[in-house]
Amino acid sequence: MSINWENLYAQGRAKAIGVPWSEEELKALKNGMNVEDVRNGILSEDMRESKEAKMDDLEKKLKVELVELAKEKGISFEENKVTKGDLILLIKQKDE
Image (cartoon, rainbow, N blue to C red; front, top):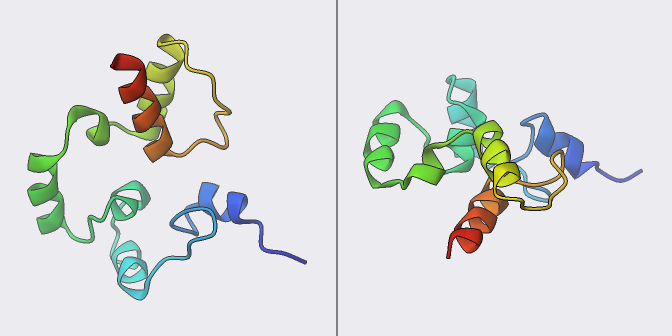
């Protein structure tokens, strides 16, 4: 039996498809950090404040918001398979 990475990712139990959480990331999750924040390298509240100042508007959006924006722009994707990072790239490409 093989690991179902898609389910693990969707459940927040893996960083990405085929990529497990590091020990440091697991610690951040256990300390209550949001899964999407940890996937973006934010491992503490201090890091969130610092990183938010550097992030562009798309990176600050939740995946649900990016899905809606991508749909509005007519981008084709499988909602339950696409990652937040891929949505950001697709939206940026569409806007160029």
